[in-house]
Image (cartoon, rainbow, N blue to C red):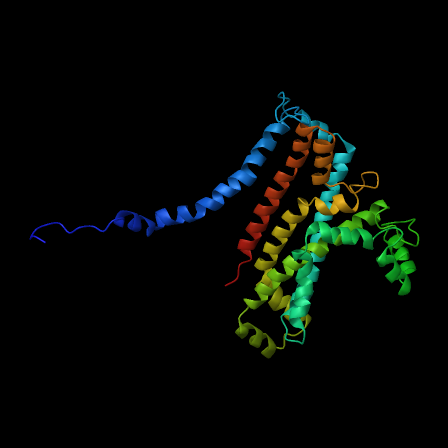
Length: 324
């Protein structure tokens, strides 16, 4: 090489340097996920907003502009208000069951005992199994004639006690043995709530176990030295340290529950007499079965502000509850 000549740059050096820059590499890596979410979530969501302001019907993806008529008509419908109320009750009640169950199971599953991995497998199985298959299984378990649940309660002599309890708390004042789990309005709502909680429970258990694993051993040792055992340890040590993790579990659980369609549709199809309709199923029956795409889209969009408020609130409290 002659003196003073510029050194030759390796081929592709500029691109290598660009890929090593965070400004280029980070957007490049996240771009596939953004594109996927835009196509799978963004486009249908934007189209649903457009349809909600039109009188589009089945077989057509366009319609004449009607403004907020679909929203006002939906709000004036008693079935819609019942579906909205059921959605709130269904979501809050199932999450309460999930949180209590996850706290108890996670506290047990972090211990060492024989067969722990088998127990963990059966706990996670409801989340891993296809939702349609598992829900159809519950449909047979709660059948009015061949209910395994009623058979078990009868063999344990608990069916009359359960009927008495339902009458005392005014959940089903005229319930009779055998219990019609999917044929009585209040019992059907209880049934779909418990089945959905059973499905979501493994997800919350895994999150709680991960949260417990993140607690330093020094904290556990210090709590034992201070005499914090049992309920005191749970209240003063475990809950404060796991609160951010619990809020994340609640946030995801609320989103999964509020938009759930399969459990209610398979078990009751919103019956009896539309008493167990929730917003996703009612939007389906109006928009798809009834052919009113515009009104169905408007019904489904009532979930959006609720989920936004819940998400913002949960994230705010999770930030406030962070511990060092």
